Length: 127
Image (cartoon, rainbow, N blue to C red; front, side, top):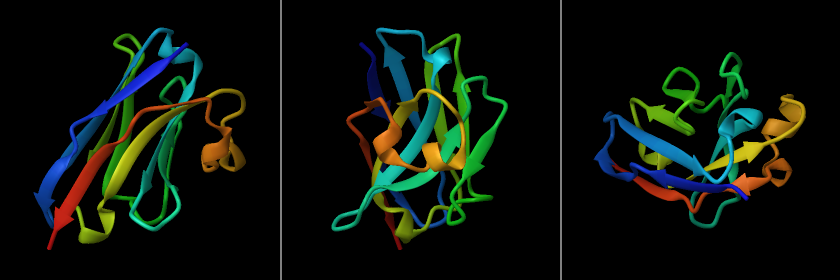
């Protein structure tokens, strides 16, 4: 059984930066790809970014490309989402998830494909 815990959310102003972390326990993280999603009130959970199990391949949603960076440290069983130039539209609860199997767009953009999820952390960006 894997448990994921996100941390690092908070309230920031537009243009600020924030780093959200995801810590895994219970099982080695390196066998899974990691994805980040977010969900704003009244909206569906949407894909933000993903990183392969080795860390060598990364993908981002168009809305965050160039501003957000995903990373991971398999030795520490952690992953991070670095968010720069934050905008009010980035306000949401951010979730990390673990994905097994193939690392292709059909899989890592689909939240239903993920085996494990964290509890989420709130990120609020004021204008």
